[in-house]
Amino acid sequence: MEEELSMIKKNKTWELVDRLKDRKVIGVKWVFRTKLNADGSINKHKVRLVVKGYAQVCGVDYLDTFAPVARLDIIRLVLAVAAQNGWKVFQLDVKSAFLNGILQEEIYVEQPEGFVEQGGNGKLVEEFKREMMQIFEMTDLGLMTYFLGMEIKQLEDEVFICQKEYAKEILKKFHMEDCKAMATPMNQKDSLSKEDGTDKVEESYFRSMVGCLMYLTATRPDILFAVSILSRFMHCASEVHLKATKRVNRYIKGTIDFGVKFKKCQNFKLLGFSDSDWGGSVDDMKSTSKYYFSLGSRVFSWCSKKQDIVAQSTTEAEFVAATTAVNQALWLRKLLCDLHLKQLNEIEVFVDN
Image 1 (cartoon, helix red, strand yellow):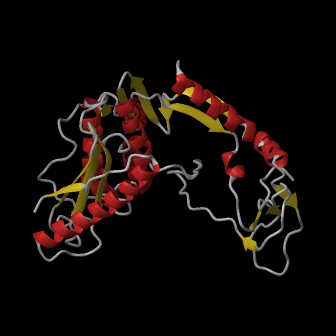
Image 2 (cartoon, helix red, strand yellow; image 1 turned 120 degrees about the vertical axis):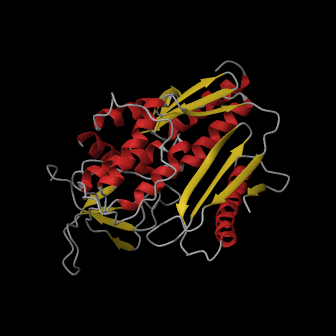
Image 3 (spheres, one colour; image 1 turned 90 degrees about the vertical axis):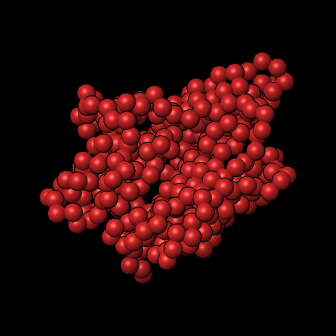
């Protein structure tokens, strides 16, 4: 915390002021001024009040901290492009990155307690690093090998991403390191519901287990459907739900080395696939939309989500799923344009009709 405060002072981010008296605000003491003039001086602006609020749950994520990060779809897309072009991906860490954001308002917050490669492409990378370091205080982490819990192995024209160590940590956390492996993450005959007649289990334990599995889907699309189903019972978990969750862990035990491999290929084209069940949710008869997109050799974007409406037919359920997939396709098309990888032809989305 001392290091963070030092960086804040160095960036001249805040100024200590008296607590506001004419507003009902909880714990207001600091004013952030980040609107800069052309000469680099700080300019006063409108006031936006921010109060303390805690959304984390004790026993689940109370001691964790969170910050906005790039979507994992984008990270996987960049790695797929790197594999296709034979590029190497490097990593830099900006110290106190949040201080470099430009805000249009002044924000009041409370003080923390206790503190009243070789060749021309390689040259371009080094030049970029030097220019960035002249503006921001950064640490050069070298070739990317680990990012947001993902292990990244960069070989010649190939990039492999996985979460092997994280998967091991999950099994250890829930005392399943020596469990019997399963061949599939979910029993096809299982039809989970909120009220199944079995005893309820400890909510925090179940939520923690499913939460861990949800982050594992960053490189494991094979467990996405099962995890999305289990996440519907966070507040009403029973013995049946816990058993199904442990089955996913047993599947992970037997597939600990699984991940996604991006390789150079001839046809570097964006393709989409969508599918849906019909009335798969026993509790509200809603269907589940699924899609994934591949670029060249491997899938890099995937989703499994319950639909917002009750479909009246299998056709309607598939149409809703296809619409969701097409929305994602449009976003990916714009993203590829930003990366100078404009798709010249229409994007094909394959639908199960």
